[in-house]
Length: 42
Image 1: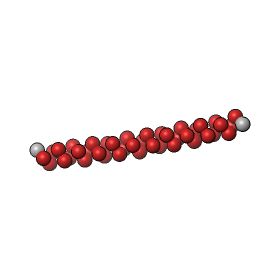
Image 2: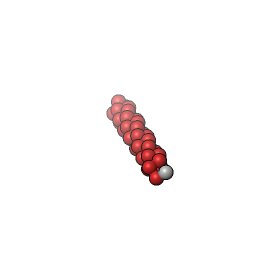
Image 3: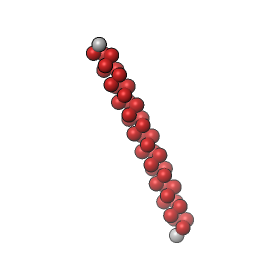
C-alpha cells in the first residue's frame, strides 16, 4: 500500500515537471513570436 502511494506520488511529480516544461517552452515561443511581429511592423 505504502509503495503504491510513493509510486503515484513520483508519477504525479514527473507529470507536473513535464507540464511545467511544456508551458515554459510555450511561453518562450509566444514571447519570441511577439518580438518578431513587433520588429516586422516597425
